[in-house]
Image (cartoon, rainbow over all chains, first blue to last red; front, side, top):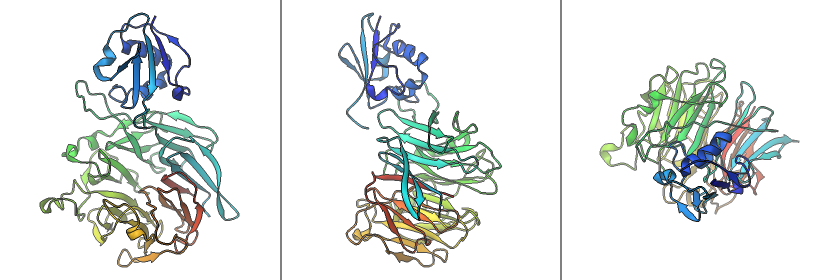
Length: 89
Length: 356
């Protein structure tokens, strides 16, 4: 199963540690977390459900730039990291 | 003396309370997080803090116990638009006001990008004001010092909450008499030195930096605009130029329609006190004359800038306070005639409210 880890900056709203999720795409994997932890969604996505400008996601070491990249498929062993970009803030 | 002062800063919320006639920090919250707006709802004492987290978006928290504990509530959200890549998303809550007792539970939030939102359940849910959103020409509004236009002032009539004047940088002033069912422009008399001559009086591109209302004479409102100060005595039907000074902050005397305070600055490329010379301007005759007050304020050169929400006056017109981008905080207990330092060591101050 894919796994998701959130930056410790989100520890007040996001689950900690490695979370095993289902989902064939990055977005459905994230949605599984959002369903269980509804507050997380607005910290990661904006009103239009775009990846926030200063949040970065890595899938197996590759940076996701947002937009349609959220719809990309993820393999069953994918490691997904949701991090705070060093830009902005 | 006012009973409490909320100070929203680049690094969190500070709640000041008086101790032997001096303001002292009684508590702090959201340390490290930028506070874009604070509110105490006079109807029930609830406190609200809007955060602008930068990376993670704008958030809103409410306290029902005077700031001891906080609960995250919802923020206004722009409706999702499929297939439009540049559709708006909430950047920051820039205005937060409680309606009067005639609209119990109702809050208004102004946002950047410019939007107006209403909550009837203490911030649990928000509804975008559709009539405001569909104002003709709204897409032509532009940012003033920010990338997007923002709604920073919601001046609610104290006897009839349906009557409001809102201010947008840069989108002018707009008024409603029916609680936001319909809006009309309320910028007549304002003029813009930063526009081509034929656009100077375009009512929809004016840059009011802050609009405030006199509580006991609610048809009197004051505006600190990008290139002038304006006053109206007819509920914003028409504004009169009372001075041509740049600045952000203005406070209206709650009882006396002739009195207001401004903290001027040098415009555009500078945004510091004019020639480093820091003062408060006070008028007591409706803007015919201004007195320049420096008692208790730092000597030249001084580089403190006072943001639009960082000056406030209490319900008597006696206590005032303002905070600066340099993290200095001053208070007055004599109607702004003299000032004393409350702190020289705060983070940059974004907003400030005195509570009664």
